Length: 356
Image 1 (cartoon, rainbow, N blue to C red):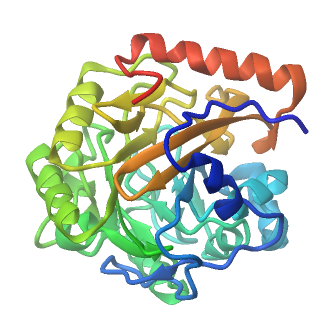
Image 2: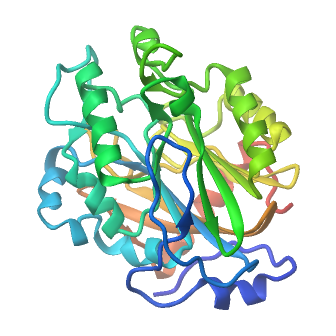
């Protein structure tokens, strides 16, 4: 399969492919030291101080027709698994409550999945998820309780959700090839009638809100002091709108000034533009990934793979996928070229640069 690549050849990228690539099969999980609401997986991290690859994909749930795929967790996420396992670190947005109980929130679409979803994510090579989004509490406080219990029981690294605000905003720390990485999650999207109930506070559980910009900036600054690389994964934007909203651009600038090296996210169910902001990398919309919902499906999406060495973004590669019945498949040949060209065009309204 021919892959369409957008790569910025800065110092050390030639060696990065050999150091970070590799064949299929399960990767060795990174060495994790987590101060989040879940504990990470611990194992050898590979060669020290080499470039690392981080793969980001968009919205994932196991609702509707996708629920049946949990019968075989090892293959649940389909043929994109090798692309995720080859990365040193892979992350998605888990847009569902992890529960089989609770009362539906008063909203049009509600998603939930059993705790076996974490096993499917792990089998797919995904290392960390954010649950800071507008579906993680679709089944109320009961669903929140069950989600937190499942995170604790499985030990799956999860950010953006917690039993209180301190846990919800707390980063997940992991060391990969000697690079200490901090990952934070927060949502800028919450239904007006649910903001108060869903936002974590000092006294109740919920989600990390990106609407509280001073709090999120404070957490990023603290992570900057404790980590070599700081990543923020956001739920933001407007559904089906291909250009970032003013509040997205404002928040991205604030987080970059605070010390974020990578700011990515989604919510629009379509890809938005990605590129450089003052030498850091921002992607305004990763699109859907393993996801289906009535009238909200866009088959074009992708996996964003960044090559990093501490604070430097050495390369960025967009790997186009096409989603069929909720399951993503990598594109090749002319189809990949067309999809990639379309993705590059999205940068025009983003205010981002194609190179550092």
